[in-house]
Image (cartoon, rainbow, N blue to C red; front, side):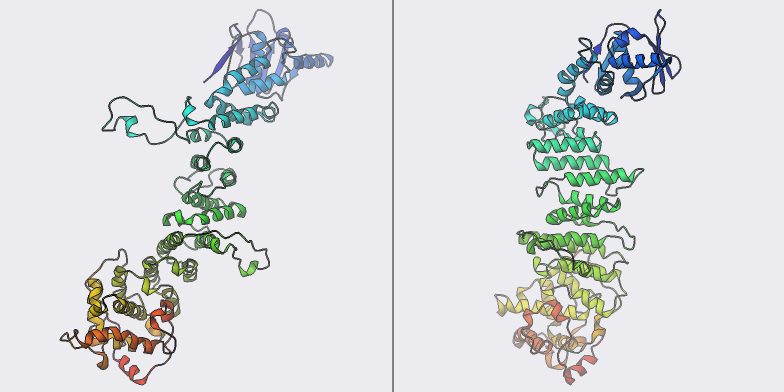
Length: 632
């Protein structure tokens, strides 16, 4: 730290208690000055020779025949006045970054200019500021911090502006030219702590990182920090991602609990709210300048601190534009109402912002139909980004589904926000649905049907299919769809003549064991009523991980087969069995959607509709197999 000593005489100021200061000399004091709550017993001559303001105050006091002079409003208070008084006596006084601003403001109050006496206090302080303080990195930050208690004097004397410009100029310099001390909280490189196995004992000088200055600026209060950051951005030499890193460091330092992801109001919620809203206001406009994870943390904090809607909307907009970068854990925003564990509505707003990029038009609720609809220029969103967000939402829903109080309409609404065509695989959605069905066993038939209709069985992987056909939480119709589409895949395979042999072994085994039961599956699908959506009350295996398993159908062939479609138990599959394996799906389609088009083109949601017609023979066939059987 830089410092400057003024004067040469020994310090003769002494105290008589906490509220009295006097000069210990042979000459009796002849003036008493009340500065704040401290009385100074001093001599007129050394003071009046350097301070026109004191000359005026003494003259006014003599006219009123008073013994003491009151100076209640001097900036810096008794401490700053004492520095000025010691200078007048020629006593040794030390100026540094912590007291120089107070001394400068007090000297201005006492009018200790160069015109009064050459080499007066104001001149000496200005030389010290220009030649030392403002040339030092950390001293400039300390000085700027001390100006907060000396407003408006420090502002009027341009001290705030000069400190701000000094700091901004140093932060904007090329890192290769930085030769002063700074704080940088990062993990040391192996070569810095001697752990590098190839280290030869010579400690190399590490290059200065681009964000070397961000930690030191965190010492500033928000108003000073804001001014410095604006000045840095105005100079245009710092990249937006470095500015974003600076704001991130400040949030972690200044917002209680931000690092843990649970901001607390603390003793001063208004202060925390102001800090967060200012950080949001300072965020660079360049996309990607801050991570989506950081934006979602800010959104979580804004919700906890009850920030204004403008702040929340800005965070939702920014986070939505780069949602593909987020992780599911970033979206686990706690609910402010306490009705549910997570705030699904807030996450839905972020997802909606992402979806809006394609059409460029903000969606409005019916209640807000009379409001002006915001129209934006559409932004190209790559298919990979859409797939990433879809999988992200599915993973988030799997966590949300664990909340027993989570209503199914919001679950469905969020799942449908991301297009089903966005991702080629629906394993994530299947897992979310499975978890929701497990945690909400009391769902009605229509609710189960609504939830399961979101999943496209054609987009399930082999492992997911293996798990699904053994999962008794799923409605029977969904299981039939999965078996049906696996048979369709076999029929559409390049080596169609090989039939089931081209499928993975576990699915092949499943189709072999259920190949002769398509007649019963057909009958079940064409005759079962809505009651079959509830299935068996017992739960199947968890979908913690989709692992292939040796499969046995939901029921043995003898339980789910009917006469006309039954394949010989002795395995006569090389002849007409293969033909049936390919033709049987067409027979099912003709019964399921007669007059509605080709079955291979229908989605899973189409399959949840009631069949068009049922024959009396099929009804009879179904009655004997209306019971679902567990998978062994």
